Length: 134
Image 1 (cartoon, rainbow, N blue to C red):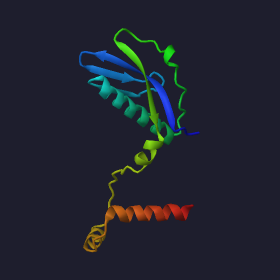
Image 2 (tube, rainbow, N blue to C red; image 1 turned 45 degrees about the horizontal axis):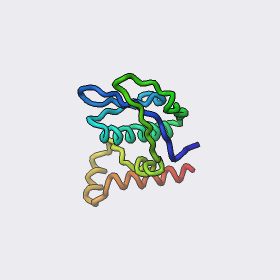
Image 3 (cartoon, helix red, strand yellow; image 1 turned 45 degrees about the vertical axis):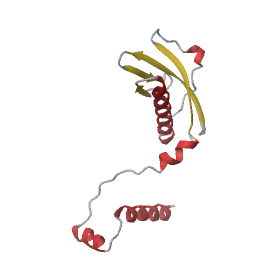
Image 4 (cartoon, one colour; image 1 turned 180 degrees about the vertical axis):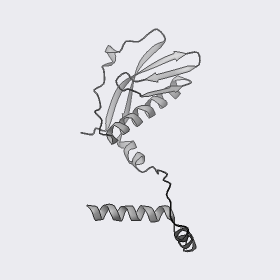
């Protein structure tokens, strides 16, 4: 079941060239930043995108490790990052995706002469096909 709010521990790893941010519970959820303020923003973005991706692919979302159980090294700090996916799901789903397609030249010319918006026409046709299939 989808939840709206999630809170996960992140590890901020400080080095001379910036901060690397990882989430021990979420494989591949990594970001970086130049300072703490940017790190918090980047951590939220990374967490949000990881969770939205997991939802899209119906992947299991693991339970977060309690902050007290996170072990860090001297140059690291653990930080709790929380996100509200309800604020991001709709915008994420409405993002445009670029597609390349091939049509006959005569159709391209005729549609252009009529001032047809190719993107809108394709979207309308796909919606009609999906509705007809349901």
